[in-house]
Image (cartoon, rainbow, N blue to C red):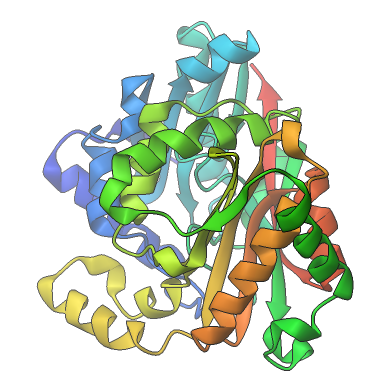
Length: 378
């Protein structure tokens, strides 16, 4: 097989890079295309990642036709924090019969990384370590929720055949509200006891919705809480404020402030939960928002969303044991039921995350999707 690796440079290249995924997933009823405006921001290198990292995009071609895509990058902020020399790959797509194509792309990614002075390649990430991390290895038979990737089962198989070693799993939980008959009072009694105690015992405890009119101030308030809460995880790298702000901005249009709660003690923000309407249910009909009429399809489908997605539970470790997690979960439970949702996605959480997994298991949620990250030496 004569496979050429070519850089993505022109506007035509960017379109070809983006549209190749339609070939991969043409028969997959659960695939939801990435949004073209967001993908183009990455391809144009205007995403926040490029303020602290570098990256390139590549297409594998055979007889002039695109047969695979990949991106390679270096997150200098992560490398400096962890004192490592690691490159990352992402934007990986290949056809079912494309093992040799996958091998060629990974060979090229390793060579690119080595030339940059790196000694390890990890992925997939697109591109920050907080964005679409891991290949989907369990749960290919259902629709992804918002901010989740979706991949064929053979991606992980190809990675392990190539020599990549698994380094960590991230998991998604599903909780059907019918289990509590759509009444938060039917949830585990312990949550209500702990939540009530949290409000009574720890100074002036406030659980509030965000003040959307003070958007920038709220983001700066929550940024250190997010980093401190996840710093206990061995693989976590603090997220730069510019990236945190960028990710928040990308969600601004879909955020429902009634599904977001901030915990404050004596006026200090010490925790928050982020819930979102699961707009993926509507985006599956939007075809990536490539054309103006796709927005109309999305607006119509958006009115029929049946689920919410619980994305972040963050509490400053200095305040663990205060019961703030339970207090915020009770509030978000009330909100999703009030809004008429029938089930809740909880994603993604590291398999080793002690707090989130404990709460999910106590609630009786079940794991329904699993993503795996890989590493290989160079």
